[in-house]
Length: 326
Length: 278
Image 1 (spheres, helix red, strand yellow):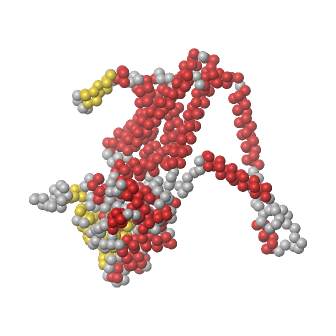
Image 2 (cartoon, rainbow over the protein chains, first blue to last red):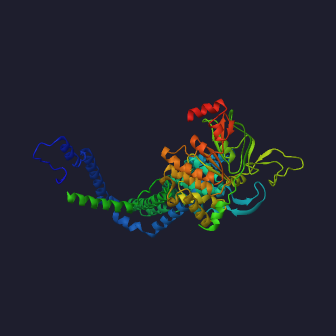
Image 3 (cartoon, chains in turn purple, red):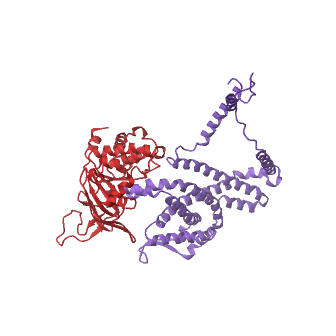
């Protein structure tokens, strides 16, 4: 066909049925117009613009004070505490969760019952209550000792020295986190096909190897997204440690706010932006971790943002060239 | 490929499998009702039977994926999954007061025994998160039989043998069903088992892919490994089986060379079954 697609084809004689067919096949199909979608898009854009304009122009937000506070040492110290508490609790919580999940899946009814009860109790008690309980723990139990149960002790610790604010915060968050992580891990393990357990058993792989190399890596595919969800909850949950006198990100802002009452709003904005940054970092890490554990689960891996950008650009260039040729 | 691994591949000793009066039931449902069967070294035994006849369960009893309620299986004279009470070092020598009851072995000991019995599943059950090469090399490394480099070399050799030398880096889900089953066979071979059990190895395959898997099994059959195969491929059974065992209702109805059981069945139930599948 020498005519451009879509052009009217004029023929000296009336076209035969066959020729008409050809003219049709050579034409590009015009996509359906969707006016409703355009209207909705426009409306949302206007609302978004209004929101951003409000954020920028409303003097109530005091963006200059936001700039002043954003990188203040007090705030950064608080941020560091938040990161520390989150990191410790995330690791300890996950380890505890794995143990609880294994206990829950064990053949021993006692282990199953203990694990179930733990998850039940810790999911029922508000985190703040757990934290304040632990804060007063040294009053309940003066010393901690390691020894024969109900018998003599070999080592004895003074509880009030052991229970620093940091320790109370980490233990409290970990206890809470472990209960949720247990369910996430258990769900992940149950999602692995029974045939995998059988194949591993039929090959005579040692029990520990079966779990570490065969079952758990496959379970991680469903554990990772759920646990990251948990982790984001945990990052925000750390703001409660303020009530056990640990100055985390939120706690520092709160303290500054009571000293400088006029700056409460910019301080809250500082906290908000920092939490947004933390969550974003976690989400990016999640993408790559999920991609890693998707190996073999799908025929091809999802593209990274960089790869997407590259193919997007290549596609665009090809399209422009095509249009130009027409 | 070094001379060592070649030798290692060659020195697999075909095993004798003895099944002694095995009973298996789930609640009130009786699956196996006293099976006695001896498979001689290098023999290819095909187990046929209607669905629900207990043939898959029998196969799974051999490597102790299912525990028999009564009876036991022995391979080269070694009891599988159990030991005789009094036989502390599993010497097989009867104590002065005579043999006691059968006792379950520890899980670790059972796993060690299973490493000498190959098993090929209907649904392949390859490890999807490992490459084809790692699927095959995993067991010899994990059970401490070979170091990692030797295991990888053996895996490459085995994959070459099943015609998949070019797929070592692929993940199982990137392969066709027939290719996956051939990887599963290579994986079972990596432990150099004296006997390989096949549980309907071609039932989950598209018809045009059945041939490539049967060709690999045939190659094994001629190489002198003891094979026990549950299948519905009657033609294949006639071609490679030394013996055909027909099971119905958890019992052996009849057994013998294919020329007898398949062509001149003596029992009504065998005739009935064959008329339905042929």
